[in-house]
Length: 88
Image (cartoon, rainbow, N blue to C red):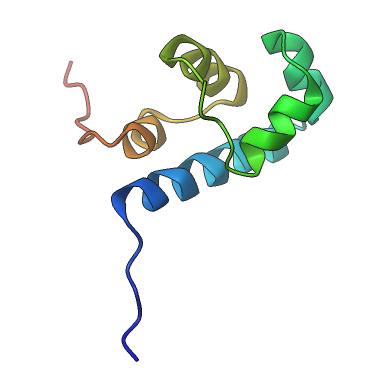
């Protein structure tokens, strides 16, 4: 049986969860600390890590990305747009 490919949404979800987990781990941030900084519950952060984030606004996502140190490339992969490095 051929291997099924992930849908674009599934790839974005995996990228989000991976970037969030990496950011929390590298910055030694707990779900509780991140939740307090974002003004949500640690249950909400736990749900995000599990792939449940249907009501996350773009503003909330931007704040979350900044707090955990997501790269521009990761953010673009998550929201599904091509990444272009800024030229100076």
